[in-house]
Image (cartoon, rainbow, N blue to C red; front, side, top):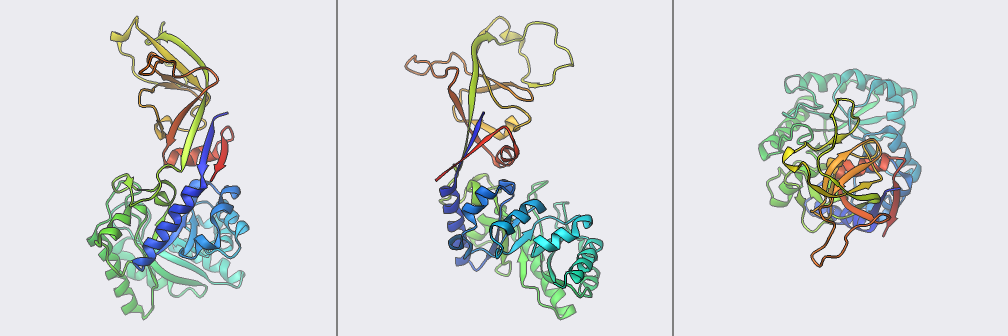
Length: 366
């Protein structure tokens, strides 16, 4: 069974560093744990008082994961980071202290459920700023807030936006300044105070670092930087964060010298995904290793071989074939053998999928 190694020490170090950095800039943040897929054994390692002291809340996009967050630490403030489905309003109010919303119909349902539970549910209203994902259209914003402010069991704690997650629209000073202006207009018109301007995710961290960040924007939702050390803005390490908290090791279950080009009539009945055939390679051979993971576990594009000489040949539901050339190192020694392992560096989506795979062993290291 292939295995995913998770270095909790490097992750907690990242969380601590981000907390200190944002506290020094007077920015609150939510730690977004969705990459952990609600795995209790992992959540127990990070929902510690010493790590939570500089964290506003802990968030996820799955209600089952929020339930596990509360199970591990009932006192942690939780935030549901996507617009809820109205059908699950009861669980949202039960397990999320705050939710991000963009539909009045859903918010009204949350209000009804909160009233039945004799509690108030806090929300951040998301605004569409160009990413074309969730968000109230700007021309509807004032009327939207007007209706929501009339709901007795809903507390509007702020406004926010999502940038960079779908089309990759970059957060800019001008984009985020729009949030500040909307906050001022809403507070002035309705005589209400909005405590939070949630200005984005890990993609926004470099802006905070360079000072190109409106000081009124006071909340971020951080996941990737905490677990992978990177910002999606440039896919580079942010400051001195750790970028190697996750490592994936696949078992070599076969290794043979084989033809580079397959032999026979190629039909449309294949179930795998293979590289394109180059007829110039016909008659040539190379060493190919078969590994014990497949499409049911992870997308190969989410795994980068640690050895740059390793090339993907194809992947099926439960096995992957890679080309390892002549299987010799610079000194002429054999590099790989059956029974050995091959190392990969997984990206964010790779880890998220592997943690959901029943066929991957998860090993926590410190």
